[in-house]
Length: 154
Image (cartoon, rainbow, N blue to C red):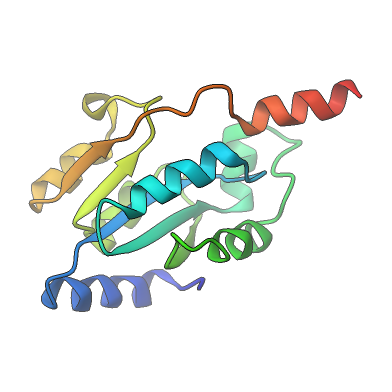
């Protein structure tokens, strides 16, 4: 279910009061592929509730270029919400998730193996309130950019 930042913050607070671990991850998820699904399933296994921050259309355009996103923020959020592992999605306009993480204060922040914990600006935020940053294994050979390039060659 796509929810706003305020409701997400309230849900995280309530879940933590009830002893649940809230996991947060984020991304563009422009064309969902098996790498994304594998990653999100593993993220969910880290706790009880998985919230996925979805970069807004404006944010994706700034990060990925004028031809992106392929799918709208609402469509990307809807598809993610259809996955068993995903409990909630929150669309955010910033290019990076620090502001959203500072608002939500999830128990665990998960990123893929293409990131290093010490290089993530959000690591300081998460650790400042006692949260944990977990880096999952990278799913080789799966990327939205590669899919788009393959389509464009045909």
